[in-house]
Image 1 (spheres, one colour):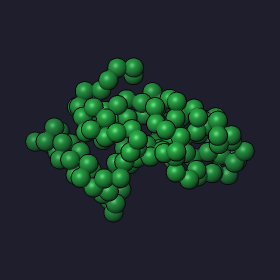
Image 2: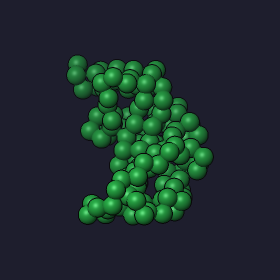
Image 3: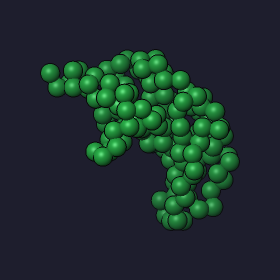
Image 4: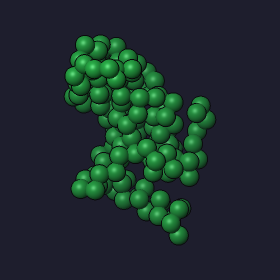
Length: 128
């Protein structure tokens, strides 16, 4: 996925991969271990909704013993989002499923208006 997403493709990506909590309509977020999923999502938010990368937050899910700094540098460079935009890293206990050396990354934007706009766009695009 090296190309920019169309608005419709981005809506589908969010619909399929996005976190959609029922009780918190103030955050638009997608969590994934693959930068080739998150990179187009970041560009889509920027291109279609005017969200500046500087206002996007990143949160890592790492396993105990992972190199937190290296993972942050990897994701910051992969997504073009500044290092200070990381929130507290969540560490999972060591286990067999530690197959992601750079962890799992969540991109989020705190905005009730953005969430309402995206939900409205989803309804008009796919449920009319």
